Amino acid sequence: METLVSTWSRTAQVLPENYVFPAGERPGSVEVPLCQNIPVIDLSPNQEKSQSQTVEEILAACQEFGFFQVVNHGVSEDLIDDTMKVAKDFYDLPDEEKAKVYSTDPNKTCRLFTSSYSYDKEQLHFWRDNLRHPCHPLDECIHLWPENPTNYRHVVGKYSLEVRKLSLRILGLICEGLGLQDGYFGEELTGAQMLLVNHYPPCPDPSLTLGLPKHADFNVITMLLQGSVSGLQVYKDGEWLGIEPIPHAFVVNIGHQLQIISNGKLRSAEHRAVTNSQEARTTIVSFTSPLLDTIIEPAKSMVDNSEPLYRTFKFKDFLKFFEEKKGDTEAIMEAYKIKPLQ
Ligand code: OGA
Ligand code: NI
Image (cartoon, rainbow, N blue to C red; front, side, top):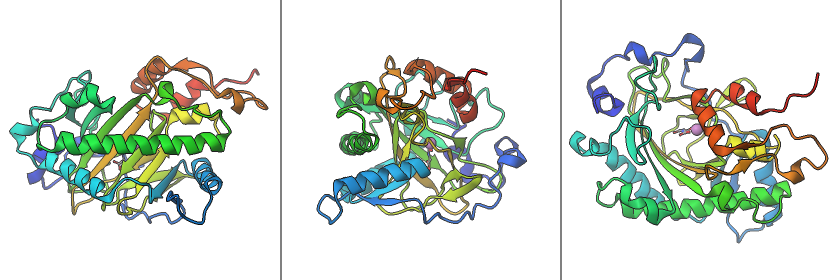
């Protein structure tokens, strides 16, 4: 418990050495301009725009940025506010209450920990605490979730169902945009869902450290609520772009599996989280992933007129490799690429 940033940093005046990133990876100035070009897509059904226009917007965003935001998405604003509140309330609980969920065992299904999977082995820590647990099928996992705050299960349960519905709806639009057969993103590709509550306490020197280092997500699709505090940045053409916090919007991004399924048409973009010295930042992340035994490969219709860029694999083997390589995108994607014959 004493390793949690939210526990020890309350009284910290200086950034400890083992949170100082190597010069080339430090954010330096955290005043990265918020990017005005990352699409904000309106999903409301009763507007002028046709569904095919929405599909086009989503596809263009996934190709260019690998990121977009959605508004008028149908998840109630009250539910979003309640979920953000309960997530913050969790981190405000007394230490002895949080200790009930804290664990360094990566095999524990529901746990609170800090930094990465390998705190004990790593030289360098990330400025974040993380609560994570599966959230689908709900009746198989809800009993493992925190018992406090007392409304955690009720609120987060409702939220998980709604966010899953929205993730599947967006995948349906992507499916249409890619021209895949209807229902392509079925249970095999989307049957696992994890919920993460990231917490980044105020940091004494945000220019030297990161909440999360540069990485791309391992899964199919991610939906993130960043509340009102900025900190999420996307890497594009050698530059970091800040993602504007829009109240009640979801930030959506493409994971490695969707890049591979689309045979490289959609981008699984690298991103990171920076910290700030003023206020704590809490984000709620929903990862939709394949079931462990699912075979992943570029969709047949994506390689009708071209060669597959990636080889076929079992999702669980990819996960193992992703962890071994600590999310190093280049090393991971290189290993899954089919090398052209010399
Ligand atoms: C993640 C992630 C960013 C954030 O959890 O994979 O990229 O702003 N989070 O919390
Ligand atoms: Ni991420």
